[in-house]
Amino acid sequence: MNSKIVCALGTALVLVAPAFAQQPPPYQAPPPAYQPPPAYQPPPQYQQAPPQYQQAPPQYQQAPPQYQQAPPQYQQAPPQYQQAPPYQQAPPYQQAPPQYQQAPPYQQAPPPVYPPPPPPYQPYQSPSGSTAHTSTHSTTHAQEGIKYHPWRVQIEGGYTITQGSDVKTLLNDGGSAGAGITWFPTAAIPIGVRVDGSYTSLPITLHGLDLASQSTGQNIADGYTDFYGGDIDAEIDLHLGLHAREYFFGGIGWYKERTTLKSVTYQQGNICFFYCYPGYFPVYSTAQTTTTDWLKSWNAGIGFEWPLSDPATFFIDGRFLRIKQPQGGYWDFIPIRVGIRF
Image (cartoon, rainbow, N blue to C red; front, side, top):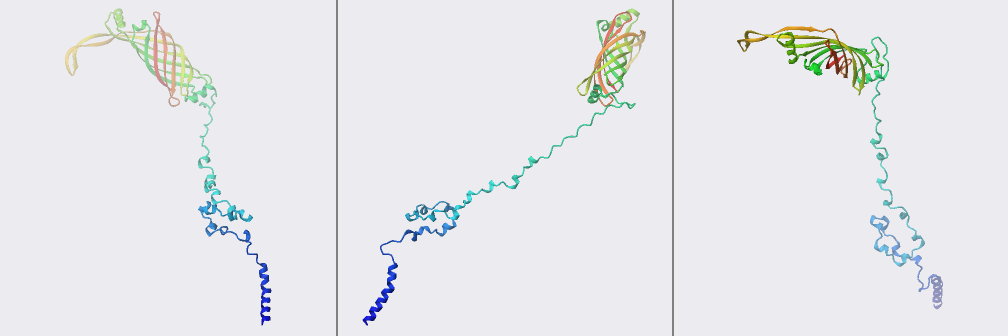
């Protein structure tokens, strides 16, 4: 019995002895590597990384001593921290949208539209088919709207002013009318020949009537002096701006003077004005008419011309006219006339 107990105890000792031999002594603590702190295990909310986790919570910032002594593998940031957070990526506005990558509409403006160039200048064709000279004079005529025409006819009318004490004491100012023709042989030279015929009527002054009454012995109450004749002048054209020209002219002429004196007598009869009543009324009759021979004259003047509708133009000119008198001396006049050339 005792031997069986001893055998059993021996067997148990043999089986238990290796187990006791492997256990560390009770006074030695396990190394830290085998007992990681509880805080080393990330909580569930730490793995999801909410936005507020970008700022470390207070308990994470104050790590326990055993957490500060982290093993080497913990000092390396987890893979999810090696990637930049969302705010480090370029925001959408940093990537230009497709519509801004293309030039705005105003940069792709259509090319400007320019008017077509004017047609080339066509020289004037005369009726005979010959081409006019392409000279400065003809080119300026085309630009001004006054085209070259070798022959031009004009009609005119205006007012004649007497000049000098000799004629002013005998004649008053009066009206005039006339016609003429101008010939420019070529467009290359702006010089032409102008022929004018005119008629002017000037009433006699009171002093002239008194002298006529004394010379004729009649009661001269009315009278006038007519001048009719013509001038042959040379004309030179000068151009002003785009639609006007100035011209100078001068030459010689021949005129006749016809003086008509009228006497007045008073006849008895009935004078009717709303009703008739007896009275005296004047009766005019030609007492004397005298006409001189052709008198020589000379003149010089200046004028301006503007185009209307080709070939018509409007002009105004004035001249100084001096006529030699039969009894000696000269009578001076200034005819101012306006007219149309075509």
